[in-house]
Amino acid sequence: MIICICGPTGVGKTKMSIELAKHFRGIIINCDAMQVYKEMNIGTAKIKEEEKEGLKHYLLDIKNLNESFSVYEYQKEVRKIIEENKDKTIILVGGTGLYMKAALYDYEFREENIKQTYDNFSNQELYEMCLKKDKNMNIHINNRQRLIRFLNKTSVSNNKDKLLYDNVLFIGLTTSREKLYEIINKRVDEMFSEGLEKEAKTLFNKYPSSKALKTAIGYKELLPYFQKECSLEDVKDLIKKNSRHYAKRQYTWYKNQMNINWFSVDYENFNNTIKEVINTIKKTYSK
Image (cartoon, rainbow, N blue to C red; front, side, top):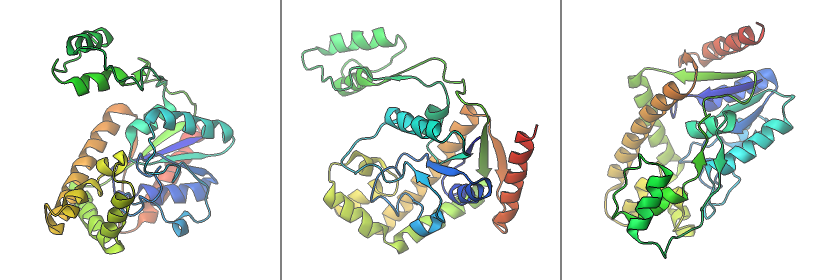
């Protein structure tokens, strides 16, 4: 069976994945777009080695920060792992909903025009090519960069609501907005206590052109601080704000894209939530 643990940032997905993997003797596959990168540890809340409890984890720390990694590549890698471990309980965990959907649904990516620069085409020609690709495209004709990016974008099949695997169960962890925001704010403070500023500065110096660093929450906000454009307190507040907004977007994605069994987390006694989830899984697969 495949168990998918979903939910917003900070809600407790990693801890739940460990407990379910122990109980069902499963393997864990990372489903977080930033945790595939080496060295981005504190800011991504990546699981520490001692927290893994000896369990096998896949697709963590597989790329350097000067390398690219797309959802198409993730899809290929994760499906290979699923095929090689189809006799085991597989647990997908992480907050990147698109990665999870691409892994499990009939999401067909086709690599086309990925490296084309279109230097020999006028804006008018690019615009007409984009309209041919999608008549509802609404990019302005003068925005050459976006037109090229649209043309280089991978295509996706129209059958992306069909699950490719049997025995897939989506487990969602949730809590009140007030509690989640409290957790997020506290976690950001803890990240700085653990050395996020130093980690980010080291990585920006080592990989100044890394796209991942410039887009990941917890890192991109620190770049203006390193350039002496804002204070550290401003950075902390912005990371908290962006993390809260990201959590809202995650909820929206999951609720619109997947059929999820939601569980309200008992933070006073997380074992209660673990037992509730395990019982639901057993009941589902005993039918």
